Image (cartoon, rainbow, N blue to C red; front, side, top):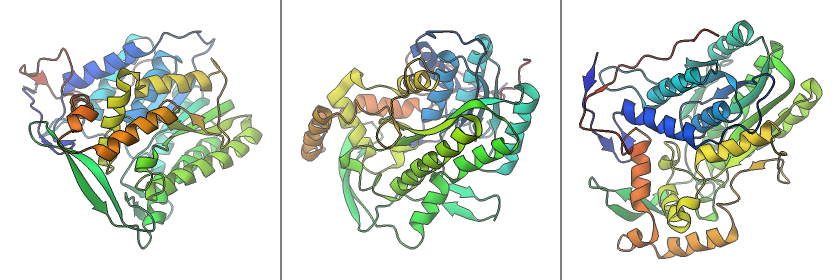
Length: 403
């Protein structure tokens, strides 16, 4: 037993410890927010979620279980408890596994490097031995700072940089007391092979490698469908995001979807799409200059009309499973971001962005919500949790339950 009181300690948006009880409650709340299935499939579909422990990947896992009735495998890369607590994703995965077990879903969680062939082989073995050797859905939601190519051994590093010229933007930071400050930050443009390195990490190469690996093992079911999660975002953040190095990677991801869609159609009558999600507070998004300010302002405009990730992924699962038709744009992408990019919403956010200062930011953005959302990424600021009480931190990784 290793019970102790855990207080939030952070450096900016990065927290050094996570709270197991808070992470568990957050997962339970997400599950409860998913509407009950509108129909029960004759056979529970087998799904693989790559990046299942955080952000949109976690939302895809929970919505898939609670709404689409999936069984299958979640893959993530999390750190076990030790001198410090485990990562928040470690505790979220344990909580998700317990909810899946409680609701009768056969879900296995594997912890390791999704980019590696070792993990791909491990997933293939579990599919063959546990799930009848057939995969119906694959959701790809990976955000990583680096990737090692299994063929060459070369390691690539992704960067957040504009392309062509330096970029200056407003951004939002918080002091130790939670007060927000609007600052100007600058970022130098990509140089050397920054673009190629970022595409190698965050583009579609590894997604395609997963499909190739599973197809070569004969593991794709007839009608197999795969979706990679993406983001476009506002013109306010385009220079650092969609028009920057990450945007180049997202464009590569979308081109990969078109290539895979054609191949899967011929191979198993299947398809591949990208799903363009809307803005949210995630561990990945808080690292992008300007995103914190943008999301806080967006919340100030929309309030509770913002659709959380689990709501968006419920919509995606409904489209993938045929509850409602697949709704694609002219580029073949599922668009879950239309509420964010509605002209009236973007006009209102832009007006606030242009006038935002430290002095008036509390009137324009929902800073209390944003600051709490950042804390909730690590299990803090969760209603109903007694943070003065000791909590068990040595939570084991979920074992494979008996089918």
